[in-house]
Length: 259
Image: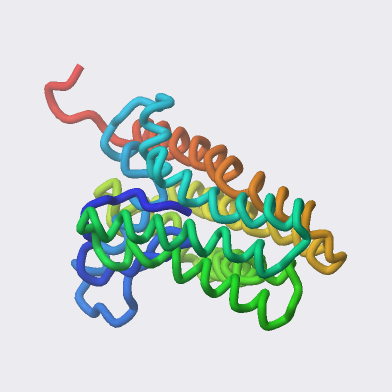
């Protein structure tokens, strides 16, 4: 997932280059944890839904990190795939994403953006490149993505099983609902469903991409990774956006004097 907050993150918030940030477990006070969960939802692209913005192409683009965020999410993997497809040379193919990663990080540093935002993507690219070089297999460039998807999948499913769906926590704090939604049966079920939808995204990626990895089909794996990255994320973001907006609008009583 891409950056959605160009300002600094609040205390207790830890950003991830591959997904929405999660509150730091070492942050003890509830206000910090609440801020972290709300920031996670904003980083995932749901901030505009809470702010009452209509779902337009411009708003959706902004929620996904803007043109820059999308380019940063797609370009390294695309360059690796193109280079390997045409050269079949692993070293040459790895140079392309590393170079573009350095350039993108340099641009962010030049604009005095937070260090985590500047180097986060570069670190991810470097890990992919190192794993691939160590094994000598081009398909291992995509292994960290499997770890990331599996981690999110496990966390989301466990959160539903224990009755604390993570998407519900994030949306609750973002919408100013706190933990009150857990006392509302309809809201609780809705947040469980939405959390499972996001878990389904990560599960689908693994189900489709792992067989290609084990088959050593780098071309198909790379193309599938791109198609199931930003585009699939965008579709689920639209669904989540409409779901949250309509659900909270429907269940939130009007203030006195409102027509």
